Amino acid sequence: MMLAGTKIWEGRLNNAHYGSIQIGDRVTFVSPTRKLDAMINEKREFGSFREMLQDNGVEAFLPGDEKDLDGAVEVYRSFPGYRDGEEEFGAVAFKIRVVVDSETSK
Image (tube, rainbow, N blue to C red; front, top):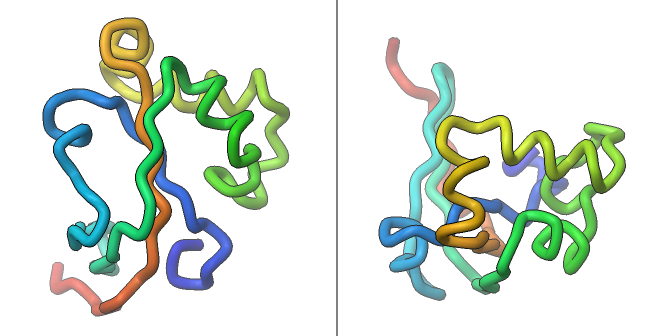
């Protein structure tokens, strides 16, 4: 979805690691078959995943998922540590643009 340009926002906990990422930074997303390098074009901080999803819409973060707002919030809270971390850290959203796409070796 990132490669196709349908997922242009990535949401994470606004903890020390993700909160330190800045506009202009390059980040790498890795799956079992692909590696995508992306540029951070925009960064927004929120008090909760609900606020983050309301700001840009569910489709921008979870394209094709057909989740309503409550369902999308639960998707984020289902990630390990995100339910408890949300209250402590809040959420951060990054607008991304893929700059390099490559296959990974298994």
